[in-house]
Amino acid sequence: MNFPAPCLVKRTVALFEKIPYSLIAFMARFSIAAVFWKSGQTKVEGFAIDLISGTFQWGEPKLAASTLFLFRSEYQLPLLSPEVAAHLAAFAEHFFPVLILLGFATRFSALALIGMTLTIQLFVYPDAYPTHGTWLALLLLLLAKGPGCLSIDYLIARRYR
Image (cartoon, rainbow, N blue to C red; front, side, top):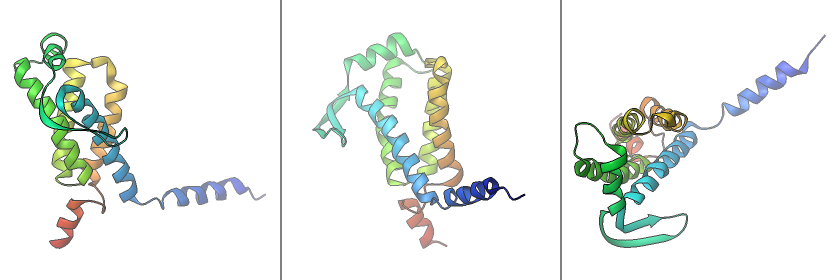
């Protein structure tokens, strides 16, 4: 007796395996960059870029009053003053997503955002592990496998091979 199901499963898996890693990596880069960028945008006033909604405000970025309030009252990170932590978070949530989106210093940027994610998980929102686990999965993929060939890192590495 010949069952078509195993053959169908094999063909389906083979089809899925043809999805280029560069497409997967780009989607991971875009998605995780959007998460952190959007979070960073909530921390500043005077500077806003949202490609999806078409919001553009070119001004000098400064911390929003609500950001300092949250870092003083709700987040309460150990070792850092609320002011320093707020500035570092706002900077990191703008700087590293841009690098990841461009695929430049991707592994370093992913490692930085892994550190930030673990800090948020351990000290700020420990019950948000499903969300943070998703972020970590994307960041670990980029850390382990790199940004793919649609990246500046790939162009630099190709030059030195």
